[in-house]
Image (cartoon, rainbow over all chains, first blue to last red; front, side):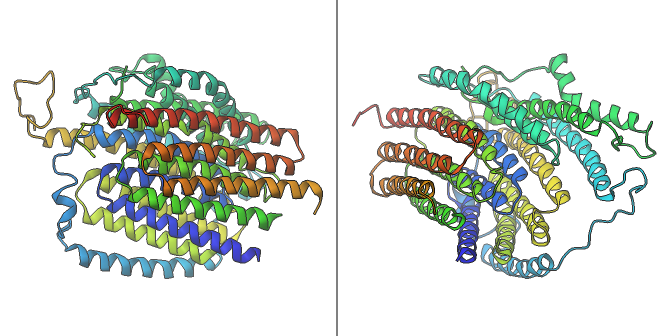
Length: 318
Length: 89
Length: 107
Length: 98
């Protein structure tokens, strides 16, 4: 009974995701595509919940409902389209030169093949991750060592990717004049201010709680940072945060706080172990929490500044 | 109890999918936003139902962060429409 | 969890994303298609991890978690790029710009 | 199955019924403003009933508080969304009221 229910839930979820994905790619108008894509993101959170990965569901919820929806919904109008929605969607020639029906057949075949390969590979148990690269004698548990090592490098590089994306957006954005902002008739301000006043404390508290609770799981800082970034996006939609012409020094410090803390930690960790970015035997939890705090602040500030640099923030200023 | 909660979640998901398909076909732009609202509240309800199938209900925080940020989409949509050229459908 | 249902979903999402990326010329359409392909890859990673152990192995989870954050930052960067491209591709009369009435044909 | 469990089942069923009613309104009503009316009201009552049912199921105070918080914040967000979209639709359709 329960098995059949689970199978039909998963099947319905998968079918809905495929329908939404098709319409977010092939729908006739920008708004339709964007809305279907946002619905797709919300359902992905359900998929993560079903697959037993609540960390991912939390990240998908905070990012999908927050910054992604503001980015994409704003982009439809802020970017004027020279040739869109008309000729391009109606012709049968695709952008790469192959006729669309041929391309559709090829992609369908690819999808069927992929499904078979994925099923075959996923149902055979994968070999356990190699622990050969880790000095098993530094930390007693090799699996913990793999995780901590992996997490250190992964997080450091990800922070760098975020910073590079922000730099790129800022450099490109300098060439643009701001899109002329006509004052919206009757802004959203009064009610939005009420909402902000009520939900800001709850959001801050939730972010700190997520950070605290996630210090044992991989990457509680990202979800907390995404939640804080959602708060920042709300403030900028309310007109309380404006796009900046120059990043002030204090903000720059916050931007590099995460990378700086990790670099410091990498150097300091050489004192107690031959490999960088390994946690000491004692006080690992407090150290991880400190790093996570720096990480959360940097992720939140970077995401908000990215949103402010993107087309979505160039509309609806007070 | 676990089976009942899953059955309720399945019913809600089916309900929301039907709603989104009908809203997709409608000609009004505001209906796109209604689809997001519908899926948003349904997702929260399903997450709550799924959360109580297992003993520590870890998915409650997920539902909480959903509702905390749920208004962002509507605000962005309305500001976008206010700036849209009036002839656009 | 039903392994086959999620495998079919991941493969279908990848195929749809690839089709969208290759078939259309609109930038935002391609951006959404690429995002869907990314979701398909994430889904496959987690399905593989969840099929062998419950809860799924934490290493793929950590990878997907960072991947989600990277995907959104890349989306923001791509949107800025789209804006730059669109403003350049427009003829001068299509997008009236207040400070730019002399019609300096940029790019 | 105890009496509390039965109460929880009844509340969750009632919540699902409200969600179904909301979607029925979506399918039947002619324009976005009417649909908004059906959607936001029915879904919030449904969410509240489901929260209440699960709160009965949850023995801990913290869980019940979190459920209540989810419901209240959901209503806040939904109120703001409904107001903004309805006003936008009124502006778009030339200010006529129904």
